[in-house]
Length: 296
Image 1 (cartoon, rainbow, N blue to C red):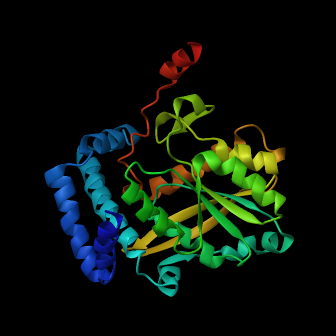
Image 2 (image 1 turned 180 degrees about the vertical axis):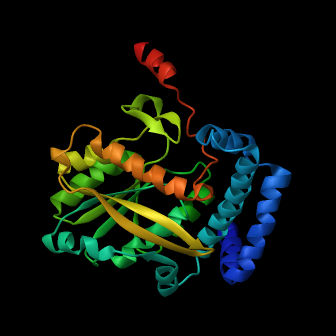
């Protein structure tokens, strides 16, 4: 099954971008108009996040989101064939030099980002780093083995390493013992499980539980934390700015780093909302319900 899936995906990846974006437009029409994939959830999320927007504005954002979402799908498949030179041109990290003093010092890093633009292309960050730097991205296995294997290969093509969520601490310990410099990347805008909710804040006009694992790991290691602020310049072209959140996490107040991350993520989304992943049931957990469950 995997070889069939890979073959179909690879054939699509051989197509030039101009053809792929025609396919993306067709896919967007099908998903939005015919299948109506999670359309009710997307609209609910948009309405609650932008209570000041009119119905017309919400629908406009909704349509733009599905177009961008389908671009994300075809761009991700394209990773199977795109060259390193082209991905560097299309996924440009504009101020990588801000990290050079820390590279020279032999530091390690915690990287935070969100489901914005094409987050799969962020794995090409490895191409911008010193060759002796280990870059790991937190990875959650998919239920379908064939899709899981395909996505695993896509995410490691440019030198990044997938780390299963349950293996993060163990992997970091191994890296430290080996005196290996590393960057561990967290897509931290997803909802935490009920048992792992430690911090709530207001995010996009809603009471929101936030993952605090990047902060906890950074504080334990006292390693620099930075945020990747992504902009979609046009179809197939992104720019990413590195913003340092903290270079001394142990000196920060509790949840200060987490709060700074969520404010940066919110600013990114508000700049161009349609580029965020609105199909996630991000606000499934509610604070009162969570408090009741913890009492059981």
